[in-house]
Image (tube, rainbow, N blue to C red):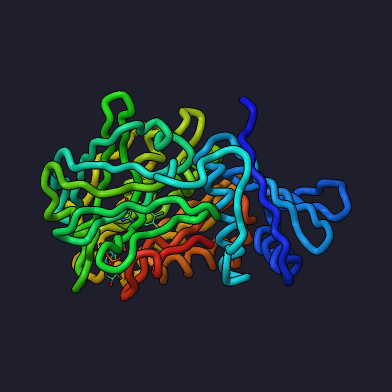
Length: 357
Ligand SMILES: Cc1cc2nc3c(=O)[nH]c(=O)nc-3n(C[C@H](O)[C@H](O)[C@H](O)COP(=O)(O)OP(=O)(O)OC[C@H]3O[C@@H](n4cnc5c(N)ncnc54)[C@H](O)[C@@H]3O)c2cc1C
């Protein structure tokens, strides 16, 4: 299938420095175009080509589908907004819509709510047109409307950025993992950790959700099952849904070892099993989540062992930092053999606490 593409031209003082910065920030994705005055980034979602001419720059983005094309426009427009402090005059020509409902947005409504364990609530949502959420990343952003108000959903701006409702209509945004999905039947499952905290919008929503409650969802994004034949997966309760999916999608020829931290034995979940899968549970036994340090300790004790090992981890920020330091500095694993992500951070809300390496 022919990729979709769109272009925009920016004529602005300082644009060259801003473009250099974009290229430097994504240097891992730069490819050699062989053309003077032109560079190109090839990311997970698509490509971005910059041609410099007469004090300005012509940007071309290309991707396999509309969702990824929107993401590429957003990467560029977000960078311009952050560094030029305005996107005035930025207009896209070519494929993809430039207004209205984002192509990657769905309204979903609660079908059922099930307590899976003392600290995990599964919500099954119904939604239309879910096919695009079955590939291209496990993760979504859930958009929770203000309690008691009719939801106002985001729209797309002509500059390629999301226009978010504000003031009394402002949405709460939280990142979650699609645990299971049935495109034909039109449902998806999300498992929510019921964690402590004075104000916990997503966990509280999961606890109180009733059939028919409506929220928004944008995505998908992030990674899926890493392309590796020997996987070491580490995670706390919040990464259990991602680890569960990875084990289910594991090729019979690949091996996986999962080390999972939860509060106690009653928090264990049924996971895919087989000769090529080993699962080890670690228990906090009432100690605060993110404070027990069980995952880094287990990783240290285990050691790197095999040359072809790929390490994947999702957990609280302090554990994330320690795990990243063990695999990078301690074991010297190259970047293409590990992905360590902070899924949340103690005393921080939502994405203020999350982040990849
Ligand atoms: C890629 C990705 C995928 C994720 N997938 C899932 C998933 O499938 N299921 C899931 O439950 N979570 C998942 N998370 C984590 C989830 O986004 C956070 O836990 C989120 O902060 C919860 O939002 P909240 O509104 O309940 O609490 P917030 O308003 O964000 O935080 C309120 C308080 O609770 C604390 N807190 C947040 N999470 C926890 C926790 N797990 N344990 C103890 N204290 C906590 C915060 O430090 C803060 O003090 C994922 C995160 C990422 C980045």
